Length: 165
Image 1 (cartoon, rainbow, N blue to C red):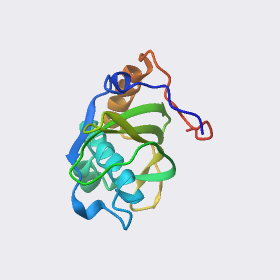
Image 2: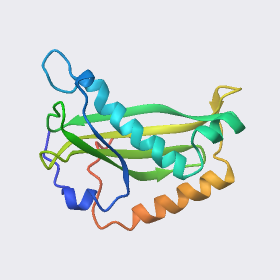
Image 3: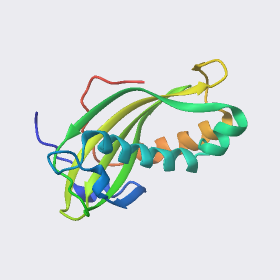
Image 4: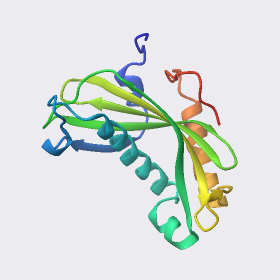
């Protein structure tokens, strides 16, 4: 596995999506953050991104739509320990009619290190039918604007290379 050349200052050009201090409950028997919580941290960032786009809880309750993960690729780069402060940044890499490809970056702010990246292929789903559905116009417009902003960044996302919308 090659090193990631993306810098923390480049990642921090993205909007901050989530920040928290790591609680003891996240630790595993090795006394570091269990793998499931790396994904959880990025999920919290995605929740914030979807809420800003009008595709959060209110949308899900009112319209009976939701966001389902289809595929994920996790790259662990540095440990996170209890009481350390982390921040999450989300980049929208590709956007389709009903799918989106995001990359989450978890920065360990306490150590000034990139802790992990999580690539997520996500789909908008009609909950009643349990099938993929196009994004509603307002959400689609908000995601298109986000995608356009992220496309102007001067750095390439360090993707695994196997995922696409």
